[in-house]
Length: 330
Image (cartoon, rainbow, N blue to C red; front, side):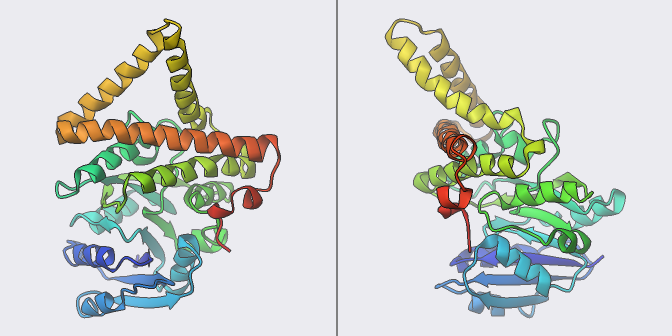
């Protein structure tokens, strides 16, 4: 099996350098190629790629900006391998990454897998807090990061593998972003392919993000989900409503507090206290406090984004591309 690593990049030469450097440290001994797709960047990474041409089997393509999904499709069409590994440019790989994928596929082959994400000690406190919110069992991140128990696993494209056969049958990613990866997973299921979590094939996801960008990102995640539910109603899950229920319940609890009913707000206080303790045990009290902020922002952004999209798409029957043009690349 020959791996082709597909990496779209947009104005992030510093990120791609860290990722490629981590590839030079892999303990995987078989051959593989790296396909970097520059998605119309104004700050290209061509010079960085040239630095690694003697260390990695690497190809570089520059194309007009059309979004990460289309760039991944472009890279897979240009690749030579029979199994594609898709990575975001802000990932850093542990030395065992490729070897773990090879072992997992050899032991129990699957046409599409997803791996988890983790944080390095060198990450900033905000990055560690956001990583906690995005991966913890205490948040919606438990589904995407570490667990297969709540539903069939939907790989995420920051750390994902797909066979050439499955790519050709599905035609790859669609034009929605975010949401293109769960959409692809569901379409693969409908075509008879399986997906699976490779828990030990994790990456260090170095999200270059601030609070404003994080809130915007999770809001888009929330807006995308009702659109996916409209496209694939047979795969709707009640769990997708939880962030909206959580945040609406919090607002109602504050109102009830004003008339002397404290019980519900106390439940929220206890939940955030457990977030503080859980995150602090792993990362220290400062990251624990920032994790409380990140979790609140995750529920707030996702929950209200979901509610807004549900009203427009499911109740008002608006065309998703008209209601939320920011979610679609042409």
